[in-house]
Image (cartoon, rainbow, N blue to C red):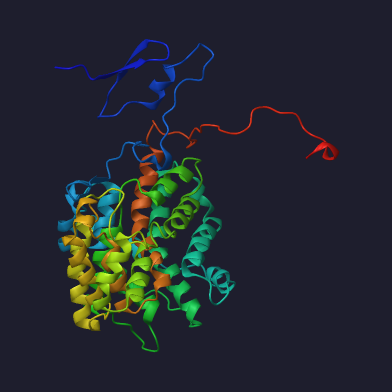
Length: 429
């Protein structure tokens, strides 16, 4: 059997190095022994965007992008979307195993009874301008929660971490609902402990004058499925932010606020908003071929296709497509659906996109569902944040308890000026 090492010959010096291989990876610090001289700092690896660098070892989410596989704690996403609920899946992601009946009941009770916000949070939200983006309100409000719960700073106390987990997962939908109602100038709708997690969220969004809001079961289920699909996705941009900020041992509210801020960008959680905008700009099914020709000619981008990790059909996109059909039966067919279907059909048959492995991703259909439910595009990334909170917390706790992890502090390759002397103002050119 071949040795589990990598042999490196530095042609600058002629020296030979044996570097151990573990889990098909080398330890970056082993490169430091490769030097030009004794006083040399040693070799670095250069990897902008962490395209081929593992920042941690994790037991939470497994992705095989070439085969289109996504699993939480070993369970295929297809099975969880069909048979589980969001809160049950969140428990699995956080604690590593599916809960027993009593564990699930206790978990749901604790999350449900931590949905109420401190009344001062209403004053905080009221301070935002009426047209403030809901995601900006949520990011700010989550960060502000750290001042309401100073016990959250006790991050190495397991009981404290558990309590903050209940609070964060329970309060995110309430914060999101309040942010949405604030943008409309409507009174806030308080949580109802009799409703399910997603039913309660719909209540905070859409309750009007009725004494008891009754969510439509199809919409309730659709949100549950979407939340499951978005619950975690390995070391993406926002999760990396959660781990990076959390590595300073700050409280979890501050870390979640940072993760949510990362998520709000158009290249991450804002992508489904960009898909909807693209579909509206195309305008009609008969204009799709002309749009495809423009994309192939370098004019514009095909949003909702392709993924940094998936080089196959995103498994979440297949599930969302079925969920969309169920929602449209209740809310009516979204007029943008025909454009989306035609766009998908042509792209999947065109060698230009097939050879580049540009398949539909999770963002392609999710925006259509959210729009059909009655939500504005500004709320799309907020829904993503609600779902991803369980994954962020699981990744944060795994990072805290991993003895290999340290304060995140990447190296750089300095390309600036060498040392130079200060020039007095009168001598500057």
